[in-house]
Image (tube, rainbow, N blue to C red; front, top):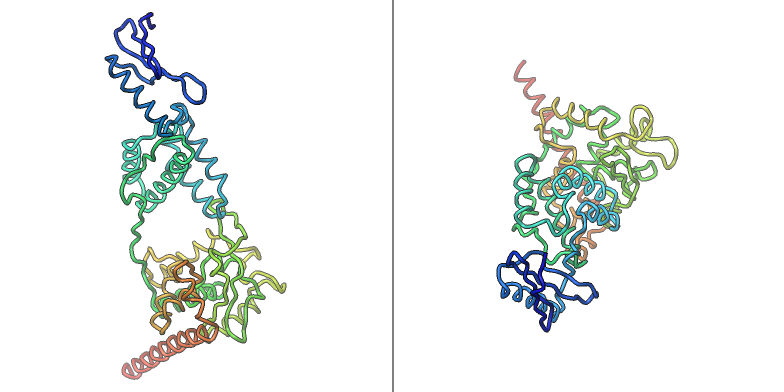
Length: 384
């Protein structure tokens, strides 16, 4: 409890407690009186603190000391809700918050999250999960707290670890033509076309999920990508736009896939004009979990590496197209990739050029198969 020994200054006031320690107070622009969050050993220390507050006010840098008394969990969830995020991005953010961020930061106020606490949290996460997940989680925390800085709830972002949000994914494996054929056969007749479009398109899984019967062009030998239907972590598919404007495209496929397309349309696609191209055995849209089990079994059967994902067929397609003569702008058009820098470049890769690439792919695959067949025949002759 303070005694009557107080001192009024031109700005604020200092007062000494019976214990001998000093406190300071001032009236802020909001009309409220604010007291120093801690006491001081000397009167000079209390006055120095007041002088710093006065300087902040004169520069326009003053911040309500209670502004950061906001629950991080409440602020983070509102942050996600207020953004116009793609369904997959929102699902990812909520998953990262739930599993990796809120268990540590959820109960703290914004102004309680300090650089040392951020470093400790990151080190603990790295010890228990993969670096890619930690990098994504760190970027999310940093983005949320950067908005808190903009909202003037905290003075400075405590996420200051250099390159902590950078992902260093290893180079993805590439399948050979033989391996693509083998895994397509191992997946069975219902799913082999999906493997081929993923590899020689190359189309994204969420694009394959939303392809329709009327998207197939047997004359040109290709498929049109109009929309995407990514599957969220809860198993629900969400119909939406492609990943970018460039994702809406017509993919010219190698000529050898004409028969595959025709057979699939007759046997497995929904019969309605706008029916789905790929359907599960029970007549419902395929689920990632069910398809994943089939993929892992087929991958193991043909001897592909255990870390070879279905999505890696897309990387395989990039590589094979490049080896078949496609330029960077050509592969960007085929893959539906977009960036500000590339927009003016790949727009000149027209349908004729895409046909040339598809024909080169067709010739490459056919030549490889022919050579493999001839080698097999020669081996049989020698064995006889």
